Image (cartoon, rainbow over all chains, first blue to last red):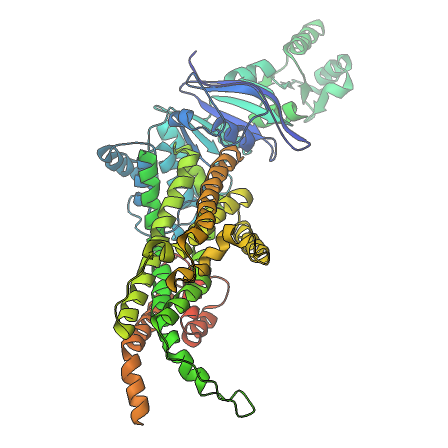
Length: 302
Length: 255
Length: 73
């Protein structure tokens, strides 16, 4: 698998506060990578180190095979960055700002003209004429997306692109991310689990400066196994007989004939099925409860 | 070089649209107009006043020298103050607001940002200073007739050079502290120290701050160019040092 | 009377451009204030008074610290 971004053993502290304590991860090309964590978990810090805005204490970062050096901007040609609260020059208009960004990135005038037209259309600012000073928060976020994409970066890094927005604004940003995933690898941080579930194919969970969970969404769910089995019995009698064989702490009664057995790995689920066989009970239904990203997250940061 | 030009163009647009350019030009033009005027009316105002005990102050007729005295005093006080207010946010406001983050992540090197900002501020300040000087010069010729200067460049560029020093200091202060207070603080400290140090006569020839108003001595011939060369050299050195320090500090700054 | 006429003639070449600049500055800042609904630091009517009452410095202060870029739409 071709990795566009790899981080090895990254450490960073601000004074006594150890913000990052040995982060390692790899982002494969073409993925939408969710970077999850509570506020203050170190997501922004990690992103800023990737962009060379902050200096890591230890560890290495490679973007498209090139090493990132603090204070230098060479690896930034592969990257587009949308800060959590993007700030632009208020006296410029959207199109002007994109022209400036494109020139800063070294694009030709015809490229800038073409790209900024496409991007303003994509982010829904095509008809907006007013100065950036009069933009709403959501409009600034969308302009931020356009300026981050102007030079067709291999990787787009967005810091909490949806957090500050209302549901409509959030949906618009997610739609934009979905629209560009074919051409651009997207890394975005968030603490909104629903966003990850909706568009990510890989995710890492950052907690107290460490990666506590990492992988493709499918893998993560599979590795975790189901969270339990929901059993429905034909009679109350069957239920009672079954419950006698299982320790009370695993059992959660739902109704008079149905029960959830909490399990932590697949072996325990095998045992449950064994118990059913031993007791010669055939339940009416047996269903594995699959984990949600939320339960994975809560499990990981516990 | 491409990044430098791109950022310079942005700075020029900003100067124009944030009214920096027009404010500076207007203030400097007014300084140029007011200087000969003050020189002319000052004797009228003062000579009419009774100093007490029946003593009437008799002042000689104003000359072109008085006009230039007023010019230096106006430019080094009101002119510099306006210039400092206009440029105090040059580095500081961008750092405190975070508007440089998208620019830097687009690949413009950090050192380029500092140099481009200094370059454009220099263009603006030079323009303002030139406008002020040309207006004052024109009026002085109109009222007192044409005159020859023995060392026009050194005489009239000295206050401009001090302005350049203030610009470099404000960029350094803004880079260090990331707010207006930092920019203004650094300039205030240098001006106050500069004036305190002036109490020692042996330091005076080396003190760049004296250049702001001190080159009058070249106009009336009481001083020679050599008297000012050490201060000019130190001023130029200080500007270069400030810029180098700003770049070094900015390159290491965590954003 | 003649004396002050003489004085006026002498100073006119200076006073006229100075007055034009000051007036222009005031008019420019009033126009800006009228077309921009939001201002900083002080309410709009205070800025209006400052611009009109404080000669030269009032309009300049408005442009440096009072103005915003938010245009009337």
